[in-house]
Length: 185
Image (cartoon, rainbow, N blue to C red; front, side, top):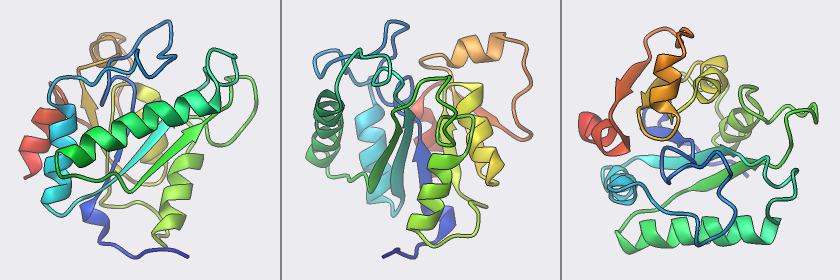
């Protein structure tokens, strides 16, 4: 059963590099899952201001055998608990467990997880929905379903800016999730 919401109040966040510190060696345990300063409070503030928050995250570490789905669930429980302790809520967390050669439709830059979120809210596309990521593929996946795209400089964000690759049209850039949140509430 789907839930109907105002698309302009839906925000889709990437996880690693946006909410928590990223690692080129993968975030492999609950202990390694460390929030970026201000990100948990930013999510809670979005929720308190009427926004619905979903997370869409590539987790190829599962396919690579770096961690188990149980460990991933422990990381996500840590995330949701920290947000709830600040008075916020994450509506849903979608993850792609596949590796880059698995030919799935959910691994960003493909829009599979975004389609799942659209279906969850009975939306044809994600026009007026904001998506926040730290990599080009995060933004490309959202843009495929007409999301408004926002890049944060945390995680791989600075590397993305320095890559010389063109960001999707009208992508706004923010220092971090806190700065993005402050700009809309």
